[in-house]
Image (tube, rainbow, N blue to C red; front, side, top):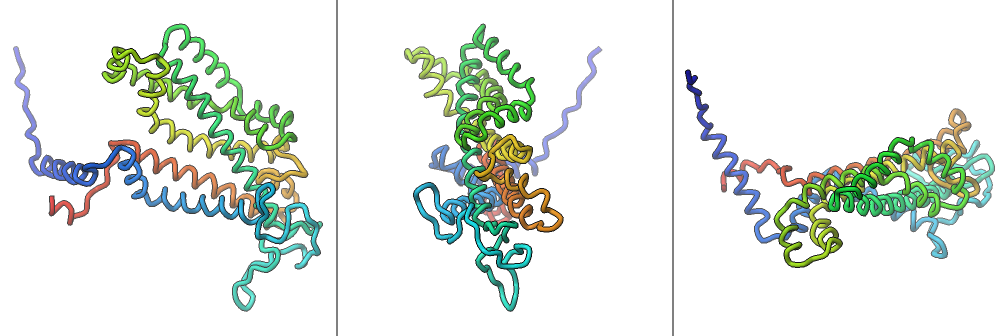
Length: 337
């Protein structure tokens, strides 16, 4: 006996509304390239734009204030210079005293007179450099490993993924502590390079999954029929289609990288004195938190600000690259449609 099924009629109002939203979205992006569409969506993400502006200001402040390498900066003090203690206990000179004043030491001084602003800016430079090195190198390694595993499959996929699983099972903080103790004194470039060698695994898995999906698409078959080599198919045709996933997760990787560097330096396994990083400053001044908390607050504020900015930028990039993310049109645009 066949049981009759009842068909639920589609709501005409909902269907008309969805058609209007689609028409508005198609009209807005008409004639634009994929890159312009992504940029347009990213600019409309308020949180990501605010984060991008704040991160840009932090980078400009850190690089121009005390200079970078042989390039001098506009700030009169250096991170290691000893100065006369201006306020009792090295309190910050920045504040409201008959009006807002910055003073010669706005972030305060430590017990031997070193300027807090110069040291925080130097720590920000080092932490940003390590974050960039880890982000770029780990992303590159993850792309290569994931692309080879996802496209070639077979024994190459098994070999690369088992090696990836082996690296994942090792605690990153433990490996980072060993590498930091060995290479931390050599500077941020070598430390960032060593840490990148153990933080690429998540990127590799994501790229592998994306390439496994893309290799079944028609444009890959067309490129193969046209005589394109495997390397050209992977990095010329498939890689641009996976850039959305790669860019979004690269930003998340960079956010976790600065927190990893901070944790290692706080534990004493990262950047060590006389050099400076944000985590190293917190480690150096942790005993002064009760008596001179400003030495602890400012490095912590910059760490949190950088990590939040990078995460918000990654969130905006995810929404920009995801075609399923749509803005709700205004009533005015709906009426015109």
